Amino acid sequence: MVRNPKISLCVLDERWPFECLQVYADAVIDSDRQLAVDLLMAVAGRMSGEPVDENTRPFFESMADEEHRVVVRCRPYDTFAQPRSVKPDEGSVVRGVSGTVPWDEPDPS
Image (cartoon, rainbow, N blue to C red):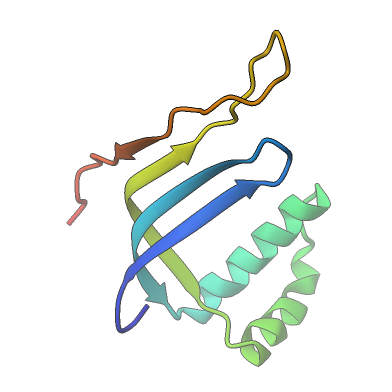
C-alpha cells in the first residue's frame, strides 16, 4: 500500500448461489498506535456484544505493539456487485445482472 495505494476488497457470500461485492479504494496507512488500540477495543466490543472494559487497554496495547498494528483508511472510488441469481418461484439459478457503481463522494481535501 505504500508503493501503490490502490486496493480492492472482495466480500463473498459463500452460500449458493454465490454473491459478491468488490470495493475499489485508495488506501492510506495510519500508524498512530493510540488509534490502533482504540480500534482494536471497538472491534472487540462489537464482537463480544458489550463494551470492552477500559482495564483491558494494556492487553490491547501490548497486542498492537507486538503485532505492529496499523489502521488502513480506505476511500472508495468504485464498486462492482454480482447479485444472487435465483428465480424465486422456481428456486433455479439464472444469470444475474452485475453492475459497477462509481462513488461520487466529494474529496474532503
